[in-house]
Image 1 (spheres, rainbow, N blue to C red):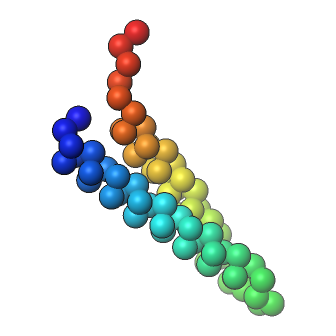
Image 2: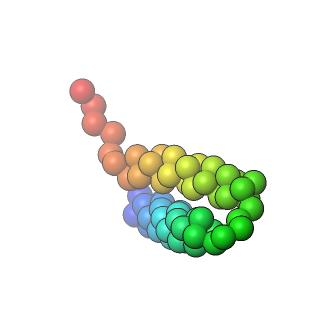
Length: 68
């Protein structure tokens, strides 16, 4: 993997992690609200899980392939 490609992957990873953290905070705030939108909360949780999967995938791109 060339250095430029690795930098782009790391930027993408940082962006995904930031969005994941922001969603985590938003979900916590929404849950604490007395009357919250269950549908919106469900969508936010689903997006958070999708982000987690994408973070894992992008992280795997940074790990070099090992020939066994």
